[in-house]
Image 1 (cartoon, rainbow, N blue to C red):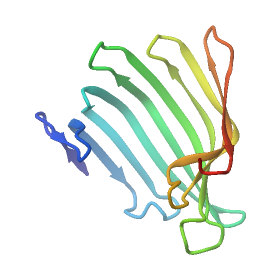
Image 2 (cartoon, rainbow, N blue to C red; image 1 turned 90 degrees about the horizontal axis):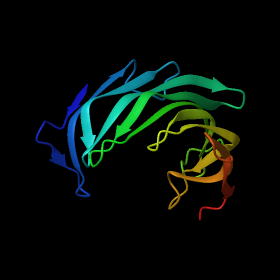
Image 3 (tube, one colour; image 1 turned 120 degrees about the vertical axis):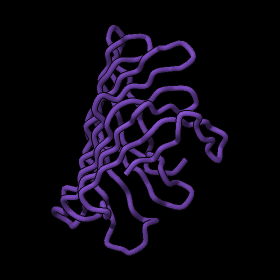
Image 4 (tube, helix red, strand yellow; image 1 turned 180 degrees about the vertical axis):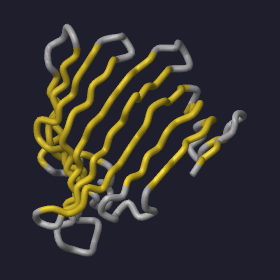
Length: 173
């Protein structure tokens, strides 16, 4: 599958300009099926004048233990090149995500629990690693979707003290 925004580009609903192509491959149209994999590759892809490069992959590892599904998420060769000044940010990510469905048919009580690491280079050229020290929980509750509500990460940036980010106690705030 190719999503081609063209060389002259498109404008998204929020006014953001986009150009280039995103190529997608998948082994099953339903990523909810155990063993399914989806991959996105960027080709000359720009958003708001900044070039986005790399490969994003999701692999459904299936259900384990209490029936929750597990997914491997990765970003390989992730780079963001700022159009304004050419600065480059690099990132590689390896995460394991557990979909905690809580035994109900409703999505509003579901959580996604993230564990894993990221590493790369900041726009200032400093190397960094980020480790999820306590699983990051993302709620699917109404008004809270796509927000981490608890967990903790520790970032280590070369030449600087470690930075700990605490995402809270589970409250969507």
